[in-house]
Amino acid sequence: MRLFAFDNSCRRRLVRALAAGLWLLVAAFSTSAKAQVPAPNYSGDFLTRSTLTGDWGGVRNDLANKGITFDIYMTQILQGVVSGGKSNVWEYGGRSQVTMTVDTGKLGLWKGGFLTIEGEGNWGSGVNANTGSLMPVNTSQLFPVPGSDAIGVPAFNYTQFLSPNFAVMVGKVDPFSSDDNEFAHGKYAKGDTQFMNTAFNVNPLTLFTVPYTPLGVGAVILPTGNPGDATIKFMVLTTSGTADTVGFNNVRSDDLTFFGEGRVRTDFFGMTGHQLIGGLVSTKEYTSITQQLSLDAGTTLAKKKGSWVVFYNFDQYFYEPVKGSGNGVGVFGRVGVADGDPNFLQYFYSFGIGGKGIFATRPNDRFGVGWYYININNPTLDTPFGSFQFLRDEQGIEAFYSFALTPWAHLTPNIQFIRGAQKQTLALSPTDRRDIQTSTTIGLRLGLAL
Image (cartoon, rainbow, N blue to C red):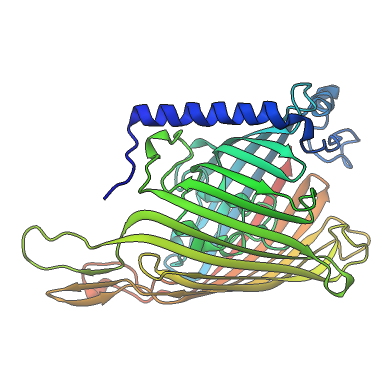
């Protein structure tokens, strides 16, 4: 039985109520909002400044001092499957992302308000469909819509700090901003600055229950007032959503995901580290991974109500010349467990080593080596003609070294070895099928901060 039904009028009332409530909270608590942070400086000569396009004749710095910043990043990737996999091909593609942030305090309005708008688009093609793996070897090529030269708005949200320790948020969110990790996440967690494989950017078990760019409302708690020390997030998200739609038509009580995550900075061995734990629970009705099909008319697919995921990650420096500088070498790991049905990605593990600035003469270089494993609860199809299973457990290794040509340009060779989950190529005739061997993929990525 449905306890709530959201028609169009209910959605409009919900949106108006959220907006009114948020505005009242802003008015009531804006005097005790989060302290302002220093504005970035985009000035400098061509080879040493932070971005390729600089300060735009001083306009960019002026806007930043007034609380309006533009973070623009472009990724270009040439990548090829050179052995194994489904087919040996080379592809070129890229993605651009623009993130605008407005700090209402610096803008002279009210304190503690932050509006975030992300826009992105991609072009060209990737080799993700040619490896036989579930995990994309080129995460960047997935967004905003896989296999499409699309333009989307993955995030459009507003955060209001009601005190130095507490904030509320509402709007369209980019879920890849969660599950942060010092060595295995990257600038946007989309294969842009660290690892290229999706398995090293986020915990892939969570992607089953959270769509890309859902609508959400939530709260952020900063126990010490400093997000670098500890952060706790709670959110309610729609379980359906795309980057090219607003998403209000997806607001239903039987189609929601409840998300929680906490991350804390540690000081083991006198060096910087982080511990993170989180969980997801979905109310959506999914298709079960086990199906029994008969020749009888009217056969329907079996359904499974709800899904859940628990995930954990850590990072820890073991060499850190200057504490908190971001330079040094450390280890990282991710672990996750899911329900197994409907989420057939049941267990996930990844571990590795990463670092930045290990050579004094190259302080902006980065590197990483990692291994991941996905235990798959194999989907089963029982038919009058026999029982079929299509997948196997998947594991892979990735290594990269990112050369900082300038502070705003990084050239990154990358290699991946993956024993994919897909066992055979799909074909109607058994004689046309062939086993899919471990794939070797090499690539070259150019990342530009514009």
